[in-house]
Image 1 (cartoon, rainbow, N blue to C red):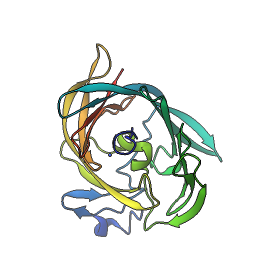
Image 2 (image 1 turned 120 degrees about the vertical axis):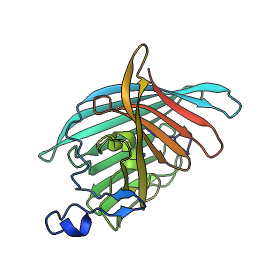
Image 3 (image 1 turned 90 degrees about the horizontal axis):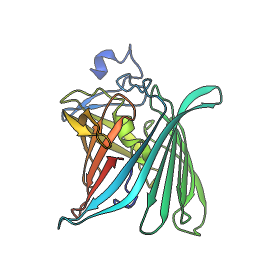
Image 4 (image 1 turned 90 degrees about the vertical axis):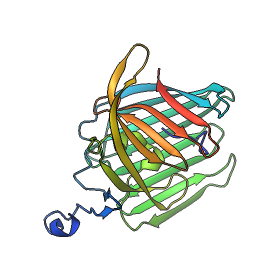
Length: 255
């Protein structure tokens, strides 16, 4: 799940010789995790469909239902690999705008393969991932010039900020007190950006009309606090609450 424009729009040195892919370090209590670290494993993810209602609440207490946000994961065979494809579609009711984000990734490692973002008004952004290397193409405005390029990052990245969000966090150990930092490609630029999260507690939460489930509350930040309610069973991301710098609360709740 994502809010466009913040509203419209989560023992290295001792074991390095035995586990070269395990690049961890303790940094302020957070485990630093790299792509390929076995602490991340999405092999349990099954195809699913989910639908949220997006509600904005102003500091005054006024609330509006702004959009519906669908989320579907399906299996994909690509170049002999079994991958997962996540498609999220936001449909904003007041201005008839839709935004679609498609993420293709390796379920076991959660390493990204591609990202495709399209805005019904015209802008698009496409990314191809290959370890530390990325290729990109896109426009930043309706009718804008198509730009293409490539970049090489310091380390391979996840695509947390580019659309995997809570689904990626659900593939980490969900236990109270677990804290980790992960490298991600930024949502809007071709730069590396670290995300830190903490598993705060377990609690029961609404999961659609007349249904409640036990979920793990996971806290992170993206220019404002973001709180996910996650499970290890489909649809994995049950709820999200994000508070913008201006104090507007965006709540994604299952329909």
